[in-house]
Image 1 (cartoon, one colour):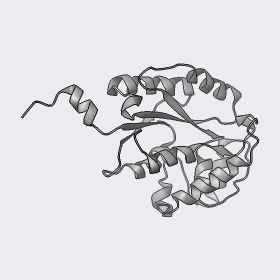
Image 2 (tube, one colour):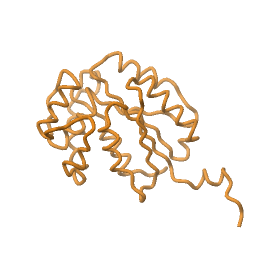
Image 3 (tube, rainbow, N blue to C red):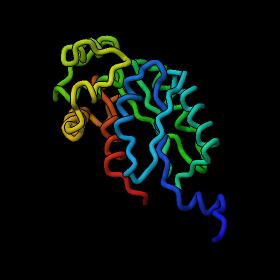
Length: 206
């Protein structure tokens, strides 16, 4: 039997999808852990970042790309989940990082404004209220999930496994209501997590 070379292994392995999550909010990691399944056509890696700003999260992502030798041509994808917190400087940092290219594997950004919890609200309502801060969004979520904290496994505790499609539809309908030329910071609430969920649920390696 011929020895399995590194090159052959790279060609036959499953594509790798990496999610870089903000380290202070464990809800994101616990949420996406529900998508780690052996039968997936990809290997999903969820990596908390000690940083919360886009620049250092992107730096972490680029390190992972080099360390794991990721390549878009093999179907690999790397996403940074960023909370904009209604902050212009936060958004400008994302735009700056987007201009940095990698020939092998480009970092993609999944933005939420003000924060990731906007996405969780779409499991419970079609019309989350706009809020003036991320903390206010979390307080709004507590009306549906009493006792919610940033360490909470919402999917498990609230039995949301069968409601992914409902949340996706609610989120997309809301996003379609915004003017396409409208600044993302004026879109409140807003999240792109539905697009990421589409990728995970319907992934095909082209």
